[in-house]
Length: 239
Image (cartoon, rainbow, N blue to C red; front, side):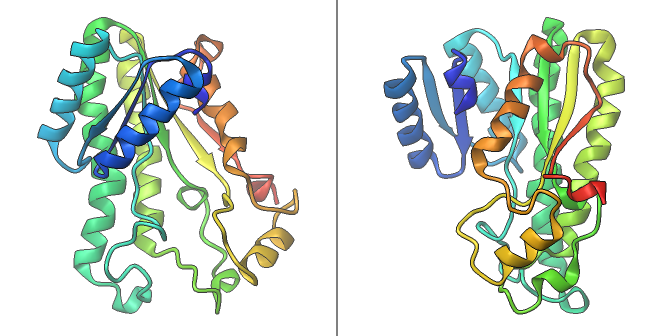
């Protein structure tokens, strides 16, 4: 992880606490910096408060929060691939609970700690589809789906980012967002080819190509940057 490579003490938090602990151990071995793996249900305020307590007890403070939890194709709701007309309310609520309410709670609990301290950087991971609509024909027959709930949740993340940036700027807390374009995750044809033909740069992003944006917004290099949505999309929104 880019922050560990820069010498930061890192906390990984997810419902899959076993995987978090394993990844934290791997980070410690690879970088030599302290790292924790903790269980967290981002939709639960008490879970966030537990994270705050454990991290402050271990490291004394929290300087950076990256809100990256989301229901996607990999961690979908039960009917994530339903059409808009048939998309169940339960799935709509589940996607918004993780993608938007989870970000809200993280900002609320950890952001309050930062406001009290008078410094901090919050980075909310948004999405291309919080900025523009999905290119619907690209998905036909590919098995890849992006429901309206996902797009709406990520647009909400951008609205929350701007709101908090203006609210907390006087308190030394910066709040920004990163909008990645399509990141390759073992996608198959014809999706990869269709995406490439629609992208000015001619391909999907690799995961490591988002790391520089995280490092920038987490560091003092972006000390005069707040309320910004840093788009890393290979030129997709430049058409």
